[in-house]
Length: 90
View 1: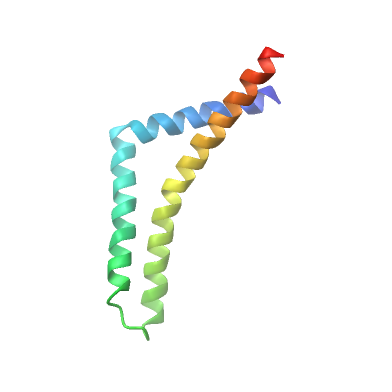
View 2: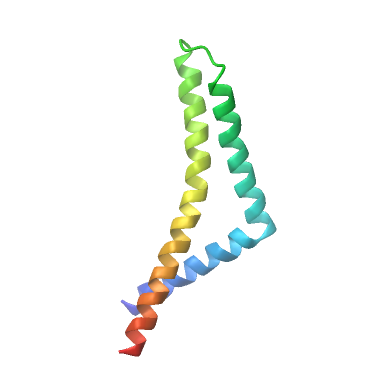
């Protein structure tokens, strides 16, 4: 169990470092721009163009997922670290 907690905590730390890095900031910015561009185009796409609507929705969804995945790794890592620290005190 401790090995799993440590691995999760380390992965969360890697996610934190990535999010703070220039590369991480750049990729998060690109994902956010993808979401914004898809939302903007959704405002003008013809309602009958279902394929394009689905395509744009998927672009926005994936852009949001990217950031969410990283944040989930960070949150799980922080939680694992707290559990590990608590277990070490006992």
